[in-house]
Image (cartoon, rainbow, N blue to C red; front, side):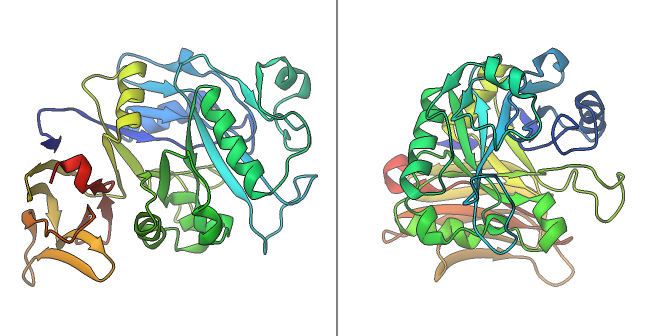
Length: 337
């Protein structure tokens, strides 16, 4: 099976960003131009509790996805606690003009005018948000019913305990990289959490995103744009094709490396990529297979054999400049081995 093929286009995407319609600094139009200049093909502007349709900014070579970021905090008035947990979820609309508001709570709607928010289609519980496990599980279910793909955002920044995250169902992908959080804390790489989810039978996909607010200019070391992205494998740059690719897990997360080919036939794996110091097949934190470059050299391909005891595998590429790329996990059942 070819999971990544050189014959299939790869569209560079940022699936998490903020404009001046919430707490970002740039207009949606300025963000589109900036991401176009950096070689992106897909952008989702996901302002806080502000479902807007920006598809009028799409062009034949650049696609806007509709969505917004929802968050649930222990504070009924949405007060930030820098030492306490909360959860942030991106809701990506499967249909381009879907701006349905899920579990609208005016205390959390701090940026969109309330009259405009209340005019949106409504889904889920209306009224006070509750930072409780079952409420969060129900929120995710209602968001999916309302036509959204749900992502779990910046788990390290959110400070939720892994035991809580293990009880959530329905988010289709985990932010493995988040540029904005990396700028803040320097360690929003969530590979360890991902492996923990896999070991407990949870198999979300993984993606990278900027979560950019652009408080600092482009090029500044504190700039939160263009640091992490998702490479979407779709036959064409259209809204239906990109959504189908996301639903199937036809994408990978990167902060630099490109993966050009990934094929798995029976138990044999072939991976081809940009120049790397190391290519890894993960089976657990205690069991991996690695192809490593000799000192002063690089590698650009690897072959692995999946052992009988491996319940799943996923793949990483580590580049000389310290950047990384990660695929989602593939189960034995999916591979038919």
